[in-house]
Length: 293
Image 1 (cartoon, one colour):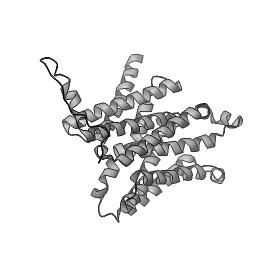
Image 2 (cartoon, helix red, strand yellow):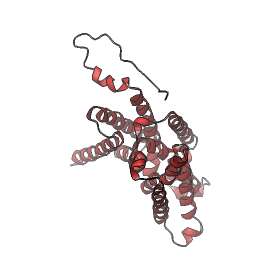
Image 3 (cartoon, one colour):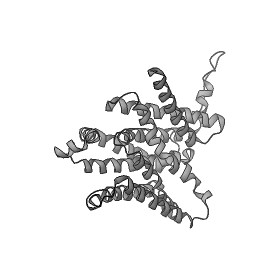
Image 4 (cartoon, rainbow, N blue to C red):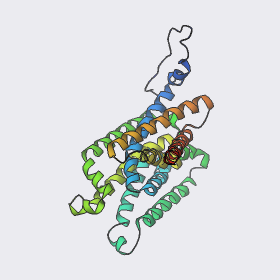
């Protein structure tokens, strides 16, 4: 398998200058470099979309999108197809289903959006569990549930690059519409932006970000990568651009430190990254509480 980077460590070391060698050691290994690149791409996509997920109070939707990748992943693996495309197809069905069922006639019948998300989420995940019955055992699918960042294939990397580019370009092109509809959906509808259309756009972009995240931390933990850095950043600023920049910085910090810890302490990379992101959130919350007291 071709590697993104293969960096042989060749340097002349004199006394007192070798302290940095342990820091460089993980990146002398090709699959670690590939894993870092994949994780940074996923962190970028999830952090940027996570800002809108937090603003729009769509954390449950993010949780649903991460779990509903399971049917697509199982089918793709059983047929030898691309896991990324299988997960994306499953997520797009979920996004469109949530958008349709939580609007129009369903809304007039009193079906709340959170109830709709719950039905779609549990239904799709249950369908994925049923499909695993034909796969032999859960052990064969553990890398889908928990992620396997160190075995990301080149095709997956290309998908993550394309997904990140699509997300960034869309956020730039629609930043005014998305920002206004996130803060005041009623006013956005009044001036013709279409809050429902913007919400569907966010859901589709979240689908792309979640598929990237699944490659890194798996089905179970992807929603944390989507929500936690943005929720932490929201404690310090409410301005959109600084919030997005801070969310990406926090996500990348958890990723880089998490990969270091997983390498030197033999920890699971995906779980370590998510745990560090949660730890940063708790530290930020504690600091704010103490600074205000």
